[in-house]
Length: 321
Picture 1 (tube, rainbow, N blue to C red):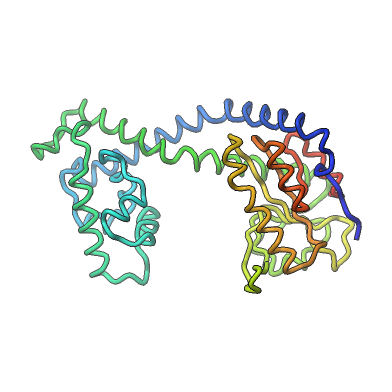
Picture 2: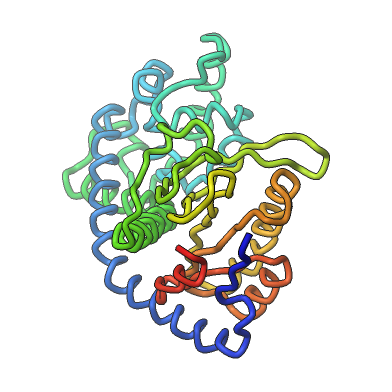
């Protein structure tokens, strides 16, 4: 099988590529982030208003209310002083992390009995009532209904808190959509055909000239146990033999250098587990955009991992794609 070299050995180009990648990311962020934040903020304010309606402006928190509308827990966390992170509320109320996760999704764990749910909800209400922010909701002290201006101010303040807690995931999700769209446009232009992941039983049986997103690929840990590894993009080259493994692509986008260097070992673990399963011929490529410095690149190159820059997506040609 032919070995492809993309960028990992072009050390003399790393510095210039890092600069171009940072500029590419920053231009996208400045164009995208303001509109996204405005839209997210309005959505958050609408959710706060709905929570006010369901709770009589937080004057009436009850187990029945949380059972009917468990997703209100997200708004309640942001209505306290200080605003409560998930883990902080989990600890203070002595509830399970699974319960918190499911409530924020608007449901309850299916295996959790009603008695246990009621006890947990009661503890949540006790904590929330003790910590509700009376400075922005002064009507709570006298259990009255707020004046319109007080209600409007509280709605916007809590909405901003909710939006702030969600802004990073919003940016990350949009980054992924952008990167997948870029790869899709490139591959479509090269004559590749997209296949839904649900229609692929085994990634090794993919037809030549096809690609898919978010596919679970079996891998093997160092202790021999099997794991399913979610892969962002799986591509079977157009000229690939039937027994040739598809190319596995991990999309990476980052807005600062610190976070990328903290997480660079994740890719090393992934390639190790893939090699444990498929041998050294498995191809694992990073699709990079943003703040990935020479230290990060050197670490990945030492692990035998190559990459394509989003600002120069045509480098996929160097990988025979």
